[in-house]
Amino acid sequence: MKANLTNQICQEIGSAIRTLGGNPEKLNLRDVWKVNRTLEFLGADAYLLATIASWAGSLMPEAAVLDHLRGWNKAASRSLKPVSSIISK
Image (cartoon, rainbow, N blue to C red; front, side, top):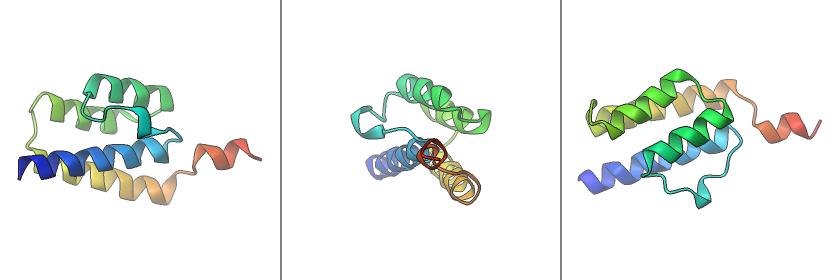
């Protein structure tokens, strides 16, 4: 069960990186320090960064982290434009 939650969390992190215009393919999504550095560079908000940091610090159960990431991705997909669509104009 834990491995499945971890994989799902990593998928949601990858989605967040893509939403912000990054490419998660070459990034170890279990390396929270590198993930948060990448997200900071891409302009992620404090809520997303804190959610991922709480996963690394075991401050929040993995199921809650997954729920928070899914919520962030759902909200972001409705409100954020991909960086590529802004640059191409």
